[in-house]
Amino acid sequence: MKLLSVCIPVYNEENNVLNTYETIKKLLDEKLINLDYEIIFADNHSIDGTESIIEKICSKDKKVKYIRYNKNIGYDRSILQAYINSSGDAVVSIDCDLQDSPDLILNFVEKWKEGYDLVYGVRKKRLEGGMFTFFRRIFYTIINYFSQDKYPKDVGDFKLIDKSIVSILRNINEPYPYVRGLVYSNSNKSFGIDYNRNKREYGESKYGFFSALKYALNAILENSYFFNALFRYFSLFILLLSLSVFLFSLISGSSNILLLFFIVILSFGLLILSIILEYITRIYFFLKKKNIFSYEKKLNL
Image (tube, rainbow, N blue to C red):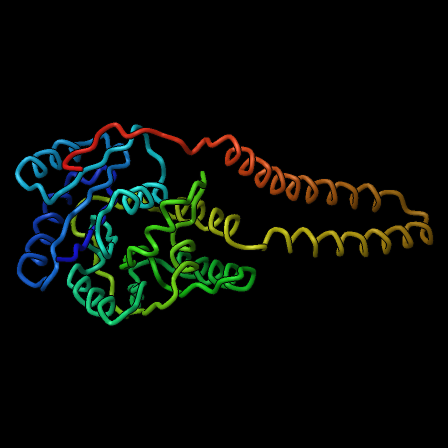
């Protein structure tokens, strides 16, 4: 019998984890047909009661697996390690707050059986502010325009991937992986299913605006040529502007405007230099294999 793995990344989710386990277990026990399953909790070094709750679950249910990292390794690396530790023929990832309806897992499985190696949920209704929506649109515009691959909009990590994609992810050795991009770029046949996201019932989200901004910047750095293009266009603009100001200063004999001009140039130059240094740092960490870490704990694995 084939196996379905359900991966659930957690961080300080003591108010959600038991309800999430019971909800998903009930769904899979009652409605999953001709498939066995396992549930994997990937704990990003929670500091509340999450660990003890999952340990109790694991002691009673051997279908539940638990991996706990020795430090907070970030959301993307956490979910990547959950994929790597899965044994399923298909793997579903879903957040612990259940804002993404678990019932949709059954629809994912049906499309997977039809031959799709990636089935993802498309959020048609978002419970977020106008600023989030505005910057999200900018993000998708940038990454789709400056990337070789085109990524679907309004899609998170609620998805099913075939084991063929998981086998590719197991060879990923990046300190800053953009897992969504890696999954989409390695899919041969994908399908999106529309759904409305629910309101979070318990606890507070750990994913605020600045977390989203950091995530977006990492995705753009890892999967697009945006900053390369920005540097190229900026350099051309500065060259033309420098020539214009130089000619103007020769004609007018002005010196103050030149001083102001060079201050602006220096400021933008430092910004571009910081982006270049970011790329160099990432290459350095990759070559030094700084992404190696150890698990603090594994249960039922």
